[in-house]
Image 1: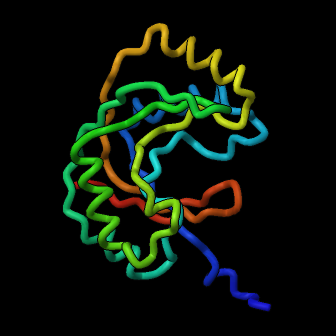
Image 2 (image 1 turned 45 degrees about the vertical axis):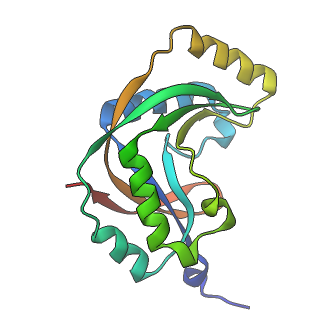
Length: 169
């Protein structure tokens, strides 16, 4: 039996948004995500499972990315929840570049096509999700958020623990 859990830790990589956008999505998540399942703040995940190695950190430390704008283009019905679609050339390029850097470590989920989104409701009934989607759609207009850096998180089987922040410069 392996008593060293350090070797089993995996990392999640997310884009850090500007504070106003983060607060907006967080408020929706608090209001609409089932409280007993809402362990996290709103997030834009780039990768769901990276190895906890020095190489993972080194790749992120060496990034030379300036802050950039991401468009929030539409709402998405997740079946049992609702998310906002986020798109942009810089976001796509960043994800593609990191996919190459981490190619040998990517999980099947992370090898699939990237569809950037921020989930504000999940694990509800389809009826509740459709109701929220309709409500949010009534006055939805595309808007922009600023991507200001990247956060690396330890996945703890539900909650996450912050490991490191890499600001764009």
